Length: 183
Ligand SMILES: CC(C)(COP(=O)(O)OP(=O)(O)OC[C@H]1O[C@@H](n2cnc3c(N)ncnc32)[C@H](O)[C@@H]1OP(=O)(O)O)[C@@H](O)C(=O)NCCC(=O)NCCS
Image (cartoon, rainbow, N blue to C red; front, side, top):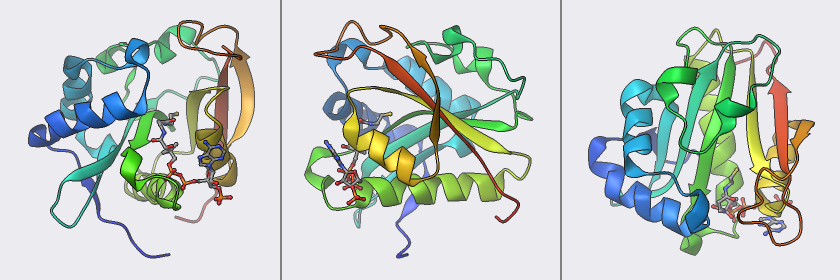
């Protein structure tokens, strides 16, 4: 697969990342700039951007590492949560907290490639990571397809988690995958 230009986010990407956030998510669930900056500072390796030929971010993916204690804490998924409360440098589960691609780049396979290559980069660098977890709205069919095609399966639903933005299904779906030995 053709390698995309994926690099760690820098502080000077922040305005562009906030534009991407605006184009990707309903206003009621957009993260604040301070939350994004904290993610970038606290776990720089886990905050990736898809750069175009001019090195401008055309997509972002951010993540955290969680303890693999087998328990799902709903609060950890909450909008605006502080990464310092949830991220553990030695955590074995890669939690993808958010991902989006700019509107003008959607619909031609880039979102899936960006997601899969980002996860591959992270699991290659973070050799103690054993699996990955994420949460999405039941209404985000594009994202659901990408995660399913990338080996994630549904493990739980949080009823009415997206009540503030839903049009027909307010549930959140939690999906998980376990990584094999090959990296
Ligand atoms: C999700 C997102 C990154 C997908 O980006 P994209 O570049 O359009 O995705 P792709 O073109 O790689 O599509 C991947 C697959 O999903 C399918 N798909 C994409 N959007 C879809 C939609 N709205 N409904 C149904 N299927 C869809 C594609 O047909 C493709 O399937 P295929 O691989 O079998 O051909 C992009 O739509 C986005 O940023 N959305 C807003 C933010 C978001 O939902 N993020 C996920 C949060 S968890």
